[in-house]
Image (tube, rainbow, N blue to C red; front, side, top):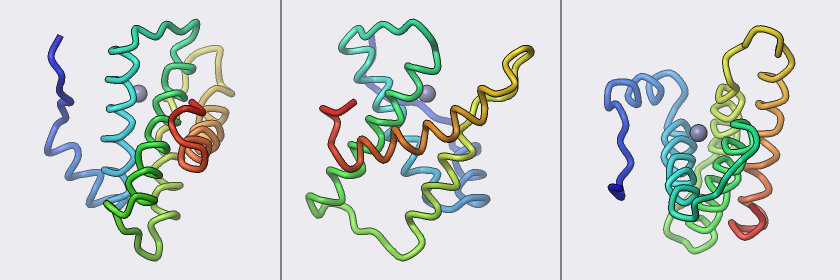
Length: 122
Ligand SMILES: [Zn+2]
């Protein structure tokens, strides 16, 4: 298994243009979260659980970078992160119409949990 994260540069640029750099600061740490899950061979009953843990890891990663001084925040960053987390909801699926809203709300709370308490809380 390779130890890398791949993303589509045009897609990432599009998100950056549309929603600011918060999109990059949500997506890349989220994907690192999936890489950690793969390394730990973590299993999940539901896909949404896997996604929410990755959101928590993303928050923990960003929190550690900010608290450690490696990353400085700017006014408006928090709003951008929340907008991007809100957009991270799963697309509607037949028979599960409430899932996207729950995922958006939970993505925010799981991200905040990781940010405030660190990755060990995930
Ligand atoms: Zn994911």
